Amino acid sequence: MPTTTEQTTAPIAEINCDELIGVFTNFLQFDVANGNASGDTIVTYWNQVKQYLEWCRNSAIDPRGATRETIKIYRWWLLEQRGYKPKTIAIKLTAVSRLYDAAMEYGLIGSNPAWGIKPPTESIDPAARITYLEQGEATTLLQSISTNLPLKTLRDKFLLGVMTLEGTRTVEMYRLNVGDVVRQGQRVGLKVSSKRHTRVVPLIPQLAQILEAYLAMRRGDGFDCMVDSPLSINLSHCGRGERLSRRGIRQVVDKYLQATNLKYMEGRTLSTHSLRHTAGTLALRNGASLRQVQDLLGHADPRTTAIYAHVGDRWENNPALKVGIDLL
Image (cartoon, rainbow, N blue to C red; front, side):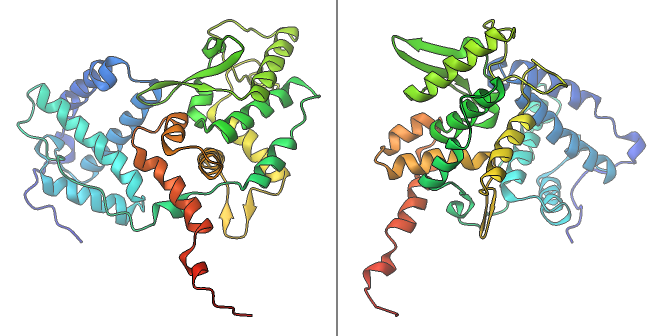
């Protein structure tokens, strides 16, 4: 087990993080995303930093005197004691590094002990994490939702259709307002906001028709359709008319995945994010270019999009098929 050599320790009662918390608060407000960070981003940073400061307190470590060794021990604790995956640890270490960036900027410390501390190596093939629907399964899922029934089914058909065919993230659907519907002549799209970027997602004509029917029925049922009202609204008795939460979106998706027996299958469990994977994988398989899919999904790095191409190619062009040996 690692030791805590070279780090500054102090009795728990004597450790005061007020200055660190103060400068980090300013950093979140004025520096993250050039002062335009989303509420979700701020909450994420705060939660990660809070966990780190709590670990310091429980370990009798003054975070103002942390060294690279301190951060490495914290990384070990996250991996071995808490069982976090490397990708999650990367997010947590980034938040800690930003905490010390803020402390440096305000003159509390001379150097950032978290600089250059990398997360554990990811041993899983990135392509192995991709779960998606085959084209026939995606068709079954979407056609299982009627468009002739109440407002809720129109909302659900639109939600699942956009996520499955256009690849939008759950958080992007959650943030959408009625005013984010974009019209260009006969074309309709959605202006979606991710962590760093805003992009327009063009809707295929059938999705545009479903959207228009949903909004028309929503107005007829007396729900607010002002530009700043949420696009996806809660239609249950509790919270009726309010913004459908991210958890609510996941529940809607799971409801239809389970109803069509697609949620749990041998060797594969699908989640809401699997719909995004479906959009990327099927688009590439059906002839879309890597750049087109990158733009559609809003990937900053084309290497992320290339994972979908790798997944499809692995199954479609297995080199073992070229050997030609008949086993039966």
